Length: 421
Image (cartoon, rainbow, N blue to C red; front, side, top):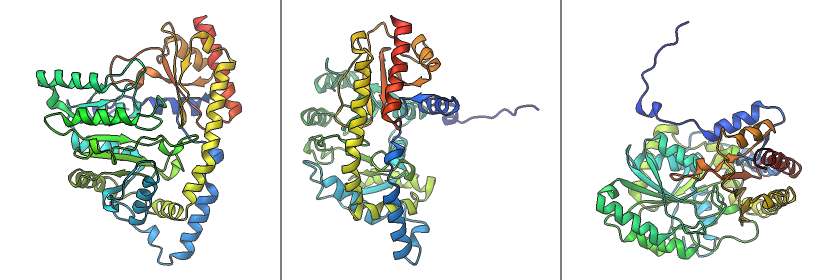
């Protein structure tokens, strides 16, 4: 039977293969594969009791069954108000002037990111990201024909505001600055680095942007903010720093990573009306509003204080899994082989740097040996907009039990010794 030829659109032709989709497919299709790659949450601590209780309350207390009907495009007002109250609980987060109309409920925070790029960027435009950055966001940009560029970093790997200012000034002189449409930051336990942006660095970045001839929109992705291990990162978000007050800004949060990924509910706080209205127009074309029943469940959970209590219980669990991952790397002798990392203060991810002789890229000898050992990791080069190093990898505590994490690291170590020693 002849395969018909399809005339693809520009967008249909552009998207690169999804790294995470390929990794997940490999994990699911290969018996015995252990994944230290995908940033899944842990099935053993998913909040089945809290969701059951909230659903039961809804079913018994709302006889008109409105929660099973269409909702509004911006999302349930009670949930939006509850999420703003949650944000205000963080140090220095003076969100008192924010109201539910500033918040939009989305299908995970990813939808807010995708639509924002759609409304702000044309093909050929430039978006600045951290180095490294969230590789799914990099895929998103390239799929929309947008070019990611890396914010310069210091020797310690932190964003370098002075070097960034110099780069933007060079682009102004060449006329390239007109193509820059957006800045994307991950302020809290970032994916993949696990690091958080210090307040002074964030303020300095804001000052750099304020000196530009036109205001550049800024997105701060706080997907892992709630999953700190001992104490929250002290820096306020761009919503509460005066250096960002005159810039178009969006804070993207989510209830998927810290609570339940399967409910697929995120949110965007965006004080600028014009940006918010344009995002809502495209969102209406996509879904007529995020799943209403899921929102109602989460509104109930946030209002009852269950979300806060759940976070209190789950943070030590993920902290213990991260300790287990680091202990396993040490016990397998990987630091003696030159593997280095900084212990994160939260999240699910560990960013590892290896000696330059280690080539961790997909398809290379180490990656192939790991596949034969039945262990997955995320190659670090996919996390860079440009000048990607070949000797980094991202590991996740994911949904493997501690026993599985230890075995996964043993397999990684066997592969490393087989290829590089």
